[in-house]
Amino acid sequence: MPEQVRIFDTTLRDGEQSPGASMDESAKVRLAIQLDRLGVDVIEAGFPIASNQEFEGVRRVAEAVKHAQVAALARALDKDIDTAGAALKGAARPVLHTFIATSDIHLEHKLRMSRGEVLAAAGRAVARAKGLVPVVEFSAEDATRSDWDYLVEVTRVVIAAGADVVNLPDTVGYTTPDEIREMFRYVIKNAPGADKVVFSTHNHNDLGLAVANALAAVEGGARQIECTINGIGERAGNTSLEEVVMAMRTRHDKYGFDCRVTSEELVPSSMLLSKVTGLAIPFNKPIVGRNAFAHESGIHQHGMIANARTYEIMAPETVGRKRSDLILGKHSGKAGLAKRCAELGYELTEEETKQLYDQFIILADRKKEVFNDDLHMLILGVQQETFEVYHLDQVRCAGGDPAMALVKLSRGEDTFTDTSVGDGPVDAACMAVERIVGVSGRLEQFEIRATTPGKDALGEAYVLVRFGDRTYRGNGASTDIIEAAIKAYVSAVNKYVAYLESQNLVAARKNGAVADE
Image 1 (cartoon, rainbow, N blue to C red):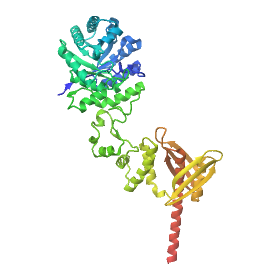
Image 2: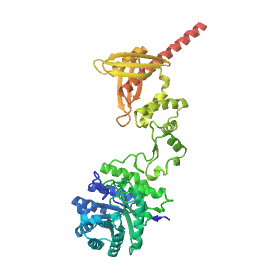
Image 3: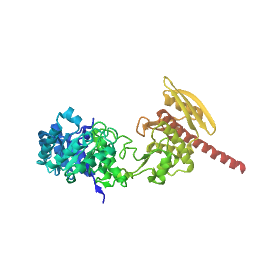
Image 4: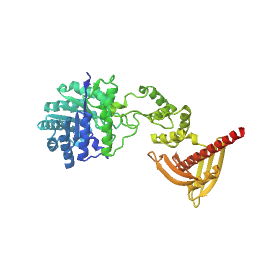
């Protein structure tokens, strides 16, 4: 049975201090309920002394959460501690979290207090908090830039005063894994009563080392990790909850610890936070980012199709995703394209796959990503190849009154070019098509719409064209809406031409049969 590490989530407190991440009381409650479902051990709900709204947010979270402990932050001041205690009245499992800085730079320039004065303040704060709630956490702010022997003394004092958890935070994200591992080992070894409390690590990400430092702290003896969903927080953010949890589970050979987090709730929690705060999840964010289980490279896609473990060290289902995504872009290969087509329900011949791939590469050069709706249109075009008598090679239009268009069509190895004028670019191009083919139709219906998201969306055009007493529907798609419209018109023309030529063939066969007799 692996040793358990407690997960202390401070998304609602430290995370909310991230610019743009402010939440009202209702948003805090909504997210707290999801964090409780996620299975974190502690939810730090806020800093009650900061404002009436903050107090109310902590109070409401304390009443709403049913399983996790709910913590409130307070400076080592009587008024802060009393206010935090009042906000936690309705909590089933309250935790009062008090702190004071211990580094010389903070003592001199911020607190203007001596080491002795800070020791006394820390002891008084913990004792006062312990009189209000059963569980008290003490944090030595800026611990990683503090004198280690002084940290040992502070730890001794707060344990004697009744602290249950001692947090040694890397407040400014300055330390390294080796340093923080040894700091925890030193304090735990030398502080009297260290075996009676839980040591906690709280790391900021200013140098991009928050997750690595948190894991190193656990190796040094910490048994609680303070972190946030999506790693949000002041400046560069905090330890990312989803990253540290999955690092322990994926590399269990390296980190012989576990936690009670339900990992399948990681992606839902991440998405809810993004929705509540409006802070987008970076595409390349580990574990929860859109690209975390996405593969575009043809080589990677081939490996994924053979065995997902070739390029994935964890299953997407374990973090709350439905499946891995084989992203279709210009780097994708035929294997990935064929697999996606099969997933969409299409059975393509080898020749159809080749034709589709050629058209796919052309589209992928225009767009960053090819979506399923794009593929539907491309596949439809490929499977309608029997109607393609003429192929649209080029269309160029110029506005004005009248508009002008140049159209280039091919039939087999022959190419045909013509220009025409019309009421608009589409009208002019359609007239040029008719001049080349030698048939004339009447456009009865014309629709165009974007089928995929983004500025480079694939435009899909539908036309209904009447030739004499027969009506034909055509469709076309392109990132250029005029080109999509002309493709649709050519599609309808091709069907009519195919019909005419089939009728001529039937007539020719009949005439030949009569002559033979």
